[in-house]
Length: 342
Image (cartoon, rainbow, N blue to C red):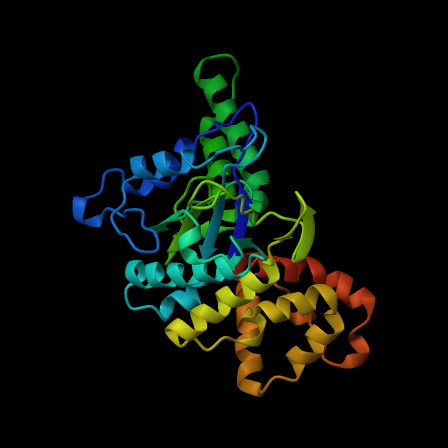
């Protein structure tokens, strides 16, 4: 499970409205049959249109400054193993989203009129997507880039020969291009992976847009707060503040397991990722002490996510800082590709 919380992008190149983001989330609905259209939904309603989402989010920004985000984006990306446990991806993920947003609310250390906030105090809209495309930040694109750059250079050279600007063998250049296409380290269905190419396999995930202001357009509820839990005196009153991301991520994972009866391996758990960051020696020790079948699954999961499994220490004496530093880069790949963001 990989979950991120991102504030609205602000600045000269971005609109103050939610319209651009909503339009982006509507991209999968282009050129599809009506029965296959994915609508927005919230805690109680289905089949909500993009126009209504924009109006509701843009109209719920009272007293927010221009430099303050008007909404936050939450992206929930289950792993392929988690998705395999679902019967109907759209309906199951919709059900799960509603549980996640209950967890979101309970992670705020806030009160409204002396009571804890509830799911009815937030304004959010979510959408299920089933496709992903490769982006420039993906490791496949980055590691294929030297090949892509050389291929572009060769194609440019071919054009100069065709235009008569220089002499050369087009056939030889095309042969070199074909060789580079085959040798690029990351391929999909026999083709070099390039930016914008659709990712194969099950890519279902959830996008959630949640208003910064509460449903009454009175109180600010920011998951970007630097406080987990604190109190401050405002206008002579004690006011609670803060958002516990740690708690939110844990509860989101537990909600998935509880809802779908998912049996989570050690390396998939949020707790394990936290231990890796805080106490890598404990992480590897716990990994090596797993039952044989669980350990085999753990190694398989890490190998598929890009971690150099052959370098995992096999005894406590190898759990030195030098070994840990060598492994950090590989394990971070695993964290980003298959777990909740920390």
